[in-house]
Length: 226
Image (cartoon, rainbow, N blue to C red; front, side, top):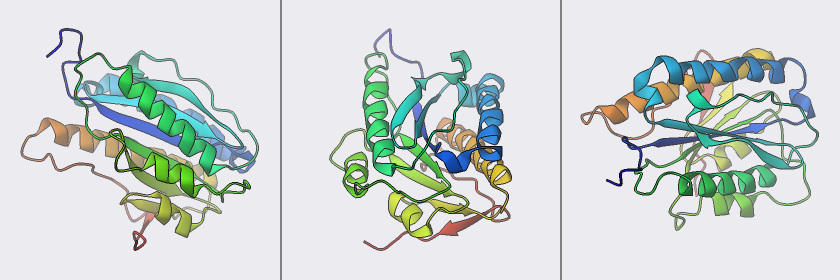
């Protein structure tokens, strides 16, 4: 292995979060309160901290990478701000760019597992452009960095869109309080990162992504047939 490469196979995680106006108040506050908890897991659990690398992409009318792919234990956590509309396509394009730049920035020779995108939204795509071409580019099976996409919806999110965007796993939050729903989604994300990271360390259990989304808080959505 290249002497500058990471010692472990990296688990790349990209959070793609809706910051449209409907997320104002409790939901965005819950998100900002939860982000340091993800960092705390990286610091307190060596099994996770060794391999998990996290990026944060937000979207409204436009999208931006607030945290490029990194060891979150060493990164400052910016405050996430509410913006305006909801353009899924902008989010998908920015995420593809963040994946490409993030994985190419790893030290030469660093091995990595398939990237995972955790998509969180509380509403519908309302931009004029169709989001499906950008989604197809993000999930293009011929792209060597093509991620697995996991979707979490709350509030006015359309179940059909969550199912269409997801690769395998799609969930709708049961809690009608948006702030509580965001907290449960972040808790599920943290638990999934922890469980998946630990499974990668155990050669007897390496069978890919583990999603911990208890049915008390989430309704699993069936994958749409092709």
